[in-house]
Image (tube, rainbow, N blue to C red; front, side, top):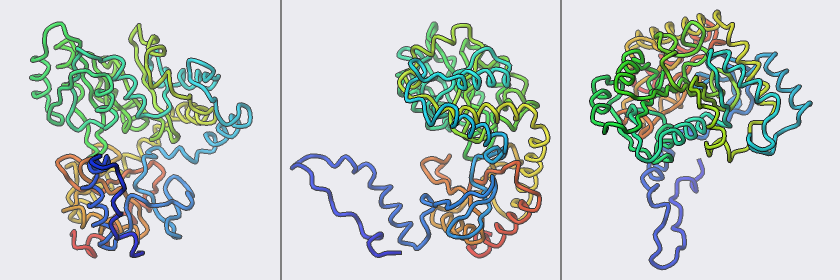
Length: 416
């Protein structure tokens, strides 16, 4: 590692008395400098030189098993998906250069929205350019000044940002605590607009929400319900519609948010709903109105992938088998996991601290395995996690290899 990387950056010249607007980041700058000074590779700057399949890439010149992507259903290399994108690129060009409310609605955008309606058996669907924008746009538009949003404290950053943008009163409650949620709902002034925001699967620990009970409480207190199913779409539920479907309450959810960047295998976000006034959101939702629409090749791949996910029961079953096998293997090896039992395709391994977590991450990379290093403040309770995201295309042999890699790296670093 070059000596220059470890040296603190010289102070920027600023006008006399002017504050350094980057000062707020000084603790993070120092944390990163300390981490790199310890000699580990930058865990937040890994480059994938070539991606060979949904489960294998070339990193640092060597073949590496991918266990840190959200490619849950392995659709990124599906031949039909790739061909659909290639054909759309030929037929419609590389981009729309416009918003959906201007020139940016192509045939493919309408087709993918219809595919979402069919997938969820709902009447309306809106597609956004990213999943982040879907939460930002829907939440900020339907809950504004004078309204109240009751949400889980562990909600994704896009949910928090949507709350902030809409200027609603935000009332958080302890993670997955039904009683705490109910208490907060009962304190809201009578007549105020109320929105409860939940997630099917929480991305850090991979745990699921008790949606059946929570939605019952929300409805009893006159609240609308939005559920983000980003990490469960395609995988959880009899038809892959998510945790709400799996718990039998999908028909009670007012808005389902999802993304194309996980099980669908491309990029984009969406909201589906049965609300009779839903279509007006196309004219009043700023992150939808003022953003260029997705390129034709992207919506073509999403459309094809979603249609295939409607008939992906065998893939879902294999992914569950992978999740159970990896969870048991890591638990038996002596690792501390984020959940007692596998609840999703995410299995998080709890590290003692950031320094040893980074060392374990690097040891795994040297073994030929890539996982996510998740650090505070993005993690619950300031934990450092190695987050494993399984894929339906991981073979049983690969899962066995992964367990062996964890055991060797764990012993080498003193984690186990």
